[in-house]
Image 1: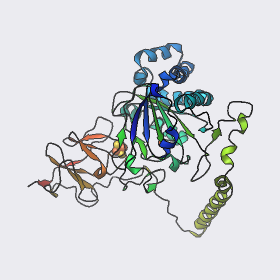
Image 2: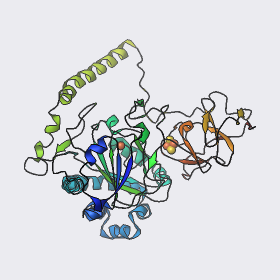
Image 3: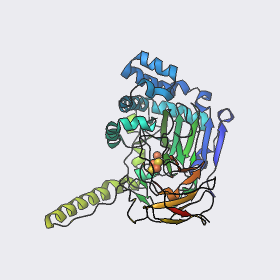
Image 4: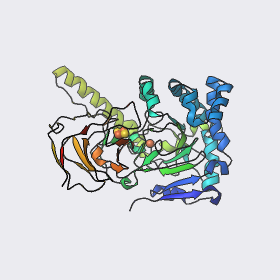
Length: 423
Ligand code: FES
Ligand SMILES: [Fe+2]
């Protein structure tokens, strides 16, 4: 059975059983949460302090007036990477005091927890704005990783080395609407899934994704081991989120201790510099410090030897390198015969390596390229909604009449005009 999604109202708190329920896969949305616990101004204050520091008080005031969702109308897209970094620094300093109050107030957990030292600051501008500054955004992603200012593809946080028992505290600092939200794939929870690097293998079916509409101050809580991704921002509003990760028990690192999760009993006081020590009193840490370097050096030596004797070692495919093999099996020419009668309403069928066929709600059968023009996800795993194919990875809605999506800077999807036998 899929994990449940539960809506809570903050004034019904405390919710003392949330830690255990989250680890069992339940997903919670707590409405009006930060306002009820008196932390809303503190959270959005981080953003406006960052804006004031970089661009001055007048700009900060102007953005307050138009709303954070329209920040891209006041600042240029090119200003967003450095603003994100400025807020990161402010949020890292205030992270613990905020979480202490949040945990006490919402879950009544006076007991201890471990928390990631830095908060995550996320600005997702409308996709066409970031395409204008593609190089700048790409270099930010290379340094600081995806998901902050660019859409994340389906992943589990443990695949990027976070503890498998971590919980995401994902807070709407502005309005979040359909088309710029987070996607969680509840059916994939605890399922064995293949991945390529940090992302889901493109042949794996993530199941139907769930998205969330949220008002500023609403909080989404979910186990970071849920498969999740970002919607490509197909709206005209910026989505702004500040999120934190924490664990209620010792962090369980599956792949390596790459992160600093501080123990709340030591953080913030005289012993703060020792607060990272408790997470490392574990076999996984000893293994990480001993076996990993040996593996790393062995690999390096093997590579160097291979170069010396002239052997080519093939790299594993990296995410984002999937090619668009539109014409690789000759199925894309106009003579393709497509049998439409065995495609059910809203069903999508792959009919070759590169072509899908689907029947829309108004009984139109359409044949189209199997690979999404954004990042090459397999559209045969998508869904049909209002005559559009919704990409399984980032929910891009693509019109099956025209091949266009709301993101004008993306290429149009190839719609084939071959003969379709729809009897
Ligand atoms: S919307 Fe990103 S791969 Fe399709
Ligand atoms: Fe994530």
